[in-house]
Image 1 (cartoon, rainbow, N blue to C red):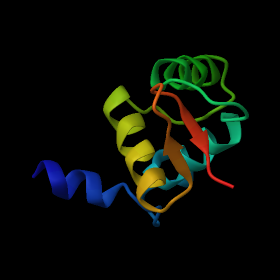
Image 2: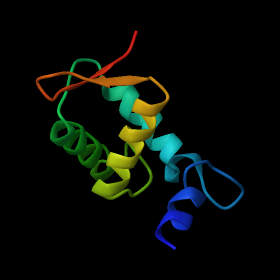
Image 3: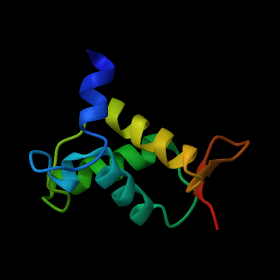
Image 4: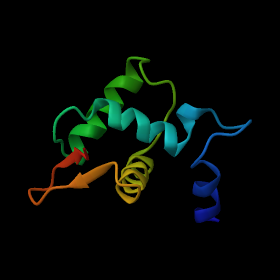
Length: 89
């Protein structure tokens, strides 16, 4: 059941807005990743954007990690040895 729920929200469809999907969250994370950042700092930036109505959908920390995993798998981000995340060229 856990996997099914997360697979349903990976991509937007007629019931899930782009901002509610992991793909949409991933694109937002890429947009705020202007310099190498930690997972915690990305969470704080996302949370502030959500609280200030800049990002319109609620995601929990688990979804943020899943979006980062997705971005890593498709080669959009990399993890440095010091634990920071950066965009790939």
